[in-house]
Length: 168
Image (tube, rainbow, N blue to C red; front, top):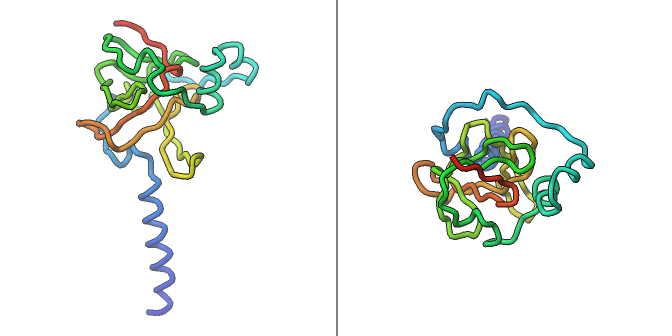
């Protein structure tokens, strides 16, 4: 019995850690529309990204920066259409999934497709958050939190400078 106790403690600790750090989407069990079959990775050099993006978009998308809240024209926009990545034009979110979270950043309760965005653990500010990245170019978009509305309970809090809006 004593020889099994260390194994039990290790296994229990590992299971607890795994459940606390799993991506937010896996825990929410979302019913997001199927995958975008046109998705192909875009890889550019740092110089190419600097030429392609504005200074602010480069700072957010490539250096994982954050724009000031309430500075994006998208945070309270009610226009109908789609939100694409400013770095690579990948469809990320639809206006039908957008809502006013009161945070000052455009917020969505789910991405356009299950593979539109990817997630990564972010420990940069002394806490564990879930970073949201463009699945095509790996550009930093923002973060996802578990305090959103139904049906998902998620809030994708996205930097407006990382988005380009296209009307329907």
